[in-house]
Amino acid sequence: MTVQDTVTHPLRSLYQKSVANYWNEEKNPVNLRLGEVDGIYHHHYGIGEADRSVLEGPEETRQERLTAELHRLECAQAELLMTHLGDITPEDRLLDSGSGRGGSSFVAHSRFGCRVDGVSISETQVAFANGQAEERGVEDKVRFHLRNMLHTGFGSDSFQAIWNNESTMYVDLSLLFPEYARLLRHGGRYVTITGCYNDAYGLPSRAVSEINAHYICSIHPRSRYFKEMAANRLVPVSVVDLTAATIPYWELRAESPLATGIEKAFLEAYKDGSFQYLLIAADKV
Image 1 (cartoon, rainbow, N blue to C red):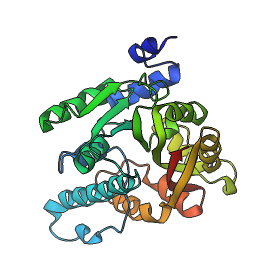
Image 2: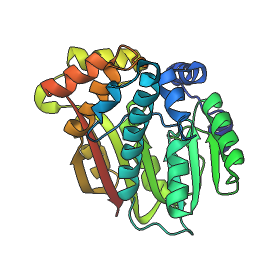
Image 3: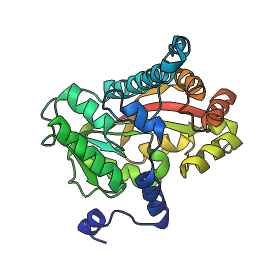
Image 4: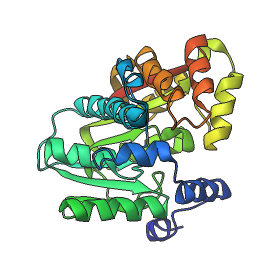
């Protein structure tokens, strides 16, 4: 299969088709309502101390307060990721790999003023994100593409930085990191924030398996990230355990009308040590 074939036909397995169908049809209020707060639509979770006073006050505005606080926490997560991308200039080009509805790409462009490309295998997500770029008047700088993160079709040494924000669990890391090593310039930065299961616990716990089934994904063990990075000239410069920092988000979300039912599994897995929430930043050498 040629590079052009992989760009024109990004779905290369039945599993990838099932993932694309899931996100094409996804209209989860916990993603949409939070994005409506300020027009930045993230598809990830939050970090930091939660303001639990939002649970108090008039009942008729309780959901509005909860939604705004959950969105504040997920925005804090995106901002933390951005601080680990290294020294980015307006002349640089970045890749948001697994870009969802585009939230992190717009945060990056606003922060750095540079060109940002996003890739997703969901036609619905790509169309939505490109519509957002046009509404914001940044379509010349922020563009989204219906492409597979394993076979992006972009040229070698094209990007100063690449990130995955909670999307690596949908792909084989032994295929993902060779692509990033090809795409990154020498000295370029890769950052991921991801949930991973704790090797010291053993095999995935029941709660981790519930998360896999809920999102039709396959959460990787912590060790696999470092093994595959090392095999592909990606040298970690920072590893931050965000597990404790994300628990307040999940506890607050569990009390929100936007809860999806998976909150209990996340909290159980984080608290029993079988699941970890990590930020890993690595340079291409």
